[in-house]
Amino acid sequence: MAESPQTPRTPDTPRGQPRTPRLVKAVLFVSVALNLVIVGLIAGLWIDKGPPRRDGGPAGIAFLQALAPEDRRRLVLEFGQTRERGRGVVTPEATRALEVLRRTPFDSAAFAAALEAETARNAARRAAGQAALVARVAAMSEAERRAYADRLEVRLAGQKRR
Image 1 (cartoon, rainbow, N blue to C red):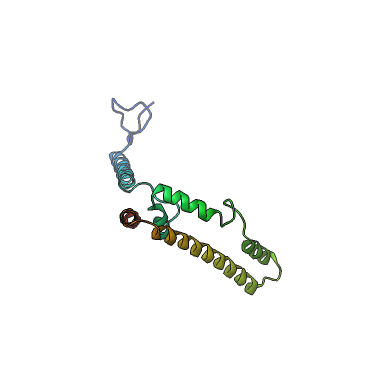
Image 2: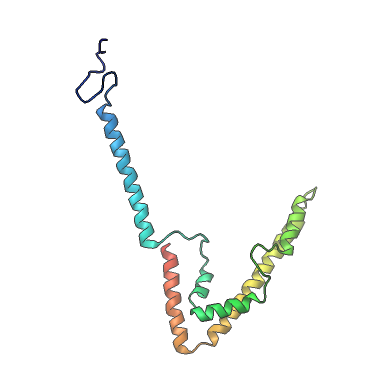
């Protein structure tokens, strides 16, 4: 069997298999190198700043996280007694919104009212949480308050970085 003129046989290529052109090898090498650079950049960011946050991190949570652990536990327990138990509890306002969504014909005013009621409920819960936090900070000594401010400053600076 004669070899074709387009695929010259060399000692390192088996009979009948074409050689990989140098250009293809170069492109593959550059592609692998770029992939490694991208992976290195992502790993570097991860190591420098930590993993990305899942919740988006509202600034308000930093005020709670900056409390001393015992203060945070006490505040969460006190606040938890004033609200419904468990995550995933469907509020009456959300149930109303679901009912309106499934109704034919759709009543946009009723849906807007259900959303407004849910917003008002969330605002009331936030106000109650803020009042509990203000009461706890007001009860702190000057040294405790300054330490709290220092921890809060660190938390807020960390949120800006991410």
